[in-house]
Amino acid sequence: MRSELGVLADPVGESLRGAHARHAVRRGRISRYDPAVSIFYAHPPHLSEEDWSDLRELAGPGSTVGLRGRRSPLPDGWTWQRTFTLLVYSGESVTTRPDDEAVVLGPGDVDDMLALVAQARPGPFARRTVELGRYLGLRDDDGELVAMAGERMRPPGWGEISAVATAERARGRGYADRLIRAVGDHIRQRGDIPFLHTTDDNPARALYERMGFTLVDEVPLEIVAVPEAPVDTAP
Image (cartoon, rainbow, N blue to C red; front, side):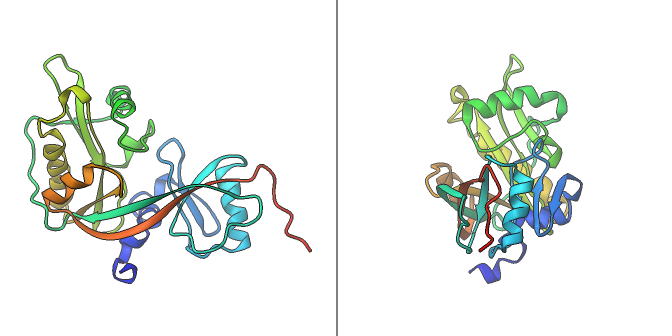
């Protein structure tokens, strides 16, 4: 399956080499987003000793990193913490449309966006994540942001729908469906295809499948602790 995925097999790396190159921090074959923008790393599936060293330097000793589809064994000093099963859905068959009530969210809305993310917990969202693409929101009559969604990764030909969040008191009104279609419409207008990530235990996957998103990949995402000190590999 992965050989047929094309750029979706490495959406972080493809984004950082292309549309998001200005947000990339690199060392050797390892790259990551500026940590003020996003937490994600790109790495080859088979990591060499030099790759592990570069990853440690980029991440910082004692930190944690997410490794996607790792095939090399962990070196001494690196500690596995948890594995998520990450699902990749293509929105090629999803019907998209603009939403006249949705407002474009920008840097001036970040405090409201972070508050909603803290409540709804849709996944990683940093103070400058809004710079990665177009984010849309719905506000109630009092001006409170009650729902949002936006675009994160940008591998060539694709746009990732992310940060789909709805305040608890506003759920059940179809806001997520509306915003996903509206963000997807913006992606389509420039000639790209929407896609998204979720985990296999996320109830939201039922919504995505009802909307017409198609599962195209399952990949392990491991959370790994970086050693505090360099590991001596000399004999």
